[in-house]
Length: 313
Image (spheres, rainbow, N blue to C red):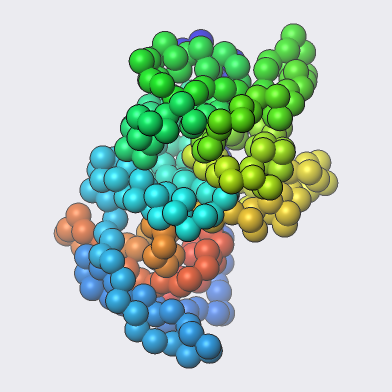
């Protein structure tokens, strides 16, 4: 695979190991789990004017395979697009539905994401809108690879966020003006896995500000591993601009589809399919189905799930 940076060593995502270690520390505050039916079909309890009332919702279950996952993600994205949401996140593991970031080799995970983006777009984007949909990959040479492989024969517009330079090994890339990459007819942007280089997510923010925020366009970030930034994986002292995204950029975003697995003795899954609530699941004993331990309307932190919700179950 001729992708600059992809074949190189990646920064493994260690937050899961850190959380597994933290699980051994006693915690004094535990939530009471809210059990629902064993296949995780739920009736969401949504606060209204300070009171809780039971509201019937559509039946959603944890996907059995990637085909079902993409169907769910497509439905969630369609509803968010129809609701006028301008900035969206889709995040799920690519090395297996029960895997965690780092289980697969970095280059393979990115290639898998590229293939899944094509399948997702085939579901979401009609042939009539393909020419008005622009897919951004992290680097320019990945666009060439995509055209030769996953996106061969596609009418979707392919583009890039950064362009490697001779000094790439020293952290320098050629500056790309995102306003120059956008065409007047563009309606939807999808940015694929912008996490290998720390500058990539900053360019995504620039794309949003320059080409989405004050327009009718909409943007989806696909497998951007944003939990690295949310969890403080990048120290604010060394990466102040990146760390600030949690306060300036991420609050504008709706996570429309999300899966994060937790391994270990108190394992489970944090799952969300828009417009449903955030749910913490655990696989039932001697079964492939999942039970829902807890649900809420806002995204809990990974630390809260690992130290509070899962141990309480």
